[in-house]
Length: 121
Image (cartoon, rainbow, N blue to C red; front, side, top):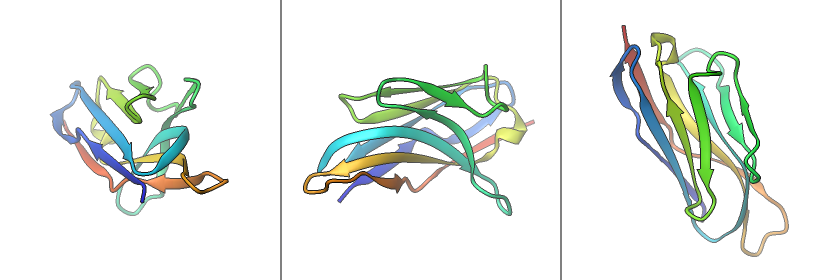
């Protein structure tokens, strides 16, 4: 069974910083791209940032220059460093990863349970 567990969310004032972590566990052979998405009530989940297994990154325009995604392949963990936070960054942040398990030929998409980030003005 594969699990993605996020941590690091919380309440922060505008202009502050937070660092999210997403740790993958289970019978994993390989992890492809990992990413962070966010969702506010009544809206669709949106892409924040992704990173490939080789380290190539992609960001939503709204977070470019403020957020940095990284990963530690040995620890099977992805990170999202969030700086200069704005109230509009308030959302539940979800980790996503393409993971191939032992005994499987294909990779499948997995989601974490989400972590709340609240930015006060």
